[in-house]
Structure formats: structure tokens, C-alpha cells
Image (tube, rainbow, N blue to C red; front, side):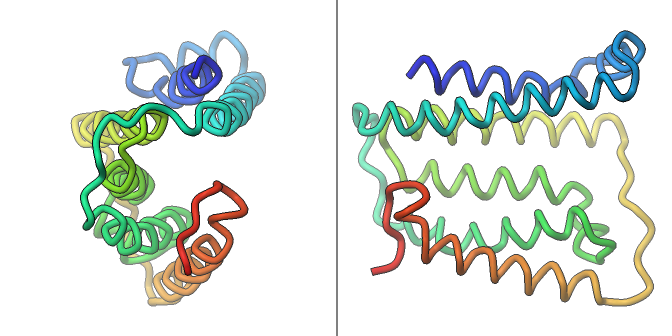
Amino acid sequence: MILLITGLVLFMGIHSIRLVPGGRNAMISGFGAGGYKVLYSLFSLTGLILIILGKIQAHPSATVWLAPEWGRMAALIAVPIALILIVAAYTPSHIRRFVQHPMLLAVMLWSGSHLAANGELSAVLLFGAFFLWSLVSMIAAFIRGDHPPKPPKGWGGDVVAIIIGVLIATLLARFHLYLFGVGIIG
């Protein structure tokens, strides 16, 4: 479980720089814009790799609670919505304008629904950490007064977000067993 925790600290630590007032600007001043991006990318990638390896290594772990029967259904509904929101975060869309922070909401939906579907200690640690981080980050974004972008002229970005999000969700459901060791379909 040490790898999982180390990965979470690295990944969420670098992603939490914006939560510290002036933290991001101080890092850019110290390392330069390019150096900051390289450092950010290295911490993110290293953290992600350690999270994946740590979760694999920690499975199976002790059961913290028995997941409710509705937990799996919640994930089946929430994950496609979360994937649509992730795509919408990178496309000019009405979804992005309406939600304001689609990436953070996507992480909350993904992690919260997986938390409801998994009661194993390593899953509770993984999904609970992501849920709390996204919740705190969203609150901080609203406090900072981050404003949504101007609305796009057409609906193309929304259509693209929905199609790509549903396609990725379908592929993830199909190959979830091979990617993460847990079967979704069948």
C-alpha cells in the first residue's frame, strides 16, 4: 500500500499547487514556465504510475465495508457522464460553460461512484482521496472566482463531448477486466 499512498501524494500534491495562494506562480518564478511544466508532468506521470502499480499490488486488501447493491449501478451511470464532462473540459461547449469546472466534477462523479461500488481498503483509499481532492479543488475554484468561458456559437463541441465520452465509456466497460482486473460486462 506504500506505493499507492506515495503515488497519491505525488499526483495530488502537484495537482494541489493551485490550492496554495501564489504557489503556482512561485513555482513558475523558481523553475521558469518550461521547467514548471516539466516538473508538473514528471510528478504527475510518476504519481500515476505509482498509483496504478500500488493499487495492483494492494489488491485484494481488507474490506472496509460491503458495497451497497446500488453502488455498481451508480458507477455504470456516473462514469459515462464523467467521461463526457472530461471531454467537455477540453472543447468549447455549452456543457463546459454550464458546469464551469467539468474536469473536477468528472473526478467527483468517477471517484464517488467507484467509492460507492468498492469497499476494499485500497479502493477506499484511492477513490476517497480523489473524491476529497476534487471536492476541495472545486470549492477553491469557486472561491477564487474562476469564471466559465464565453458560450460557443454552435453545439458542435457538445456533440463531440457526448459522442467521444460515450465511446470511451463503452470501451472502458468492455475492457475494464483487462485494464483493471474487475469485470463490468458479463
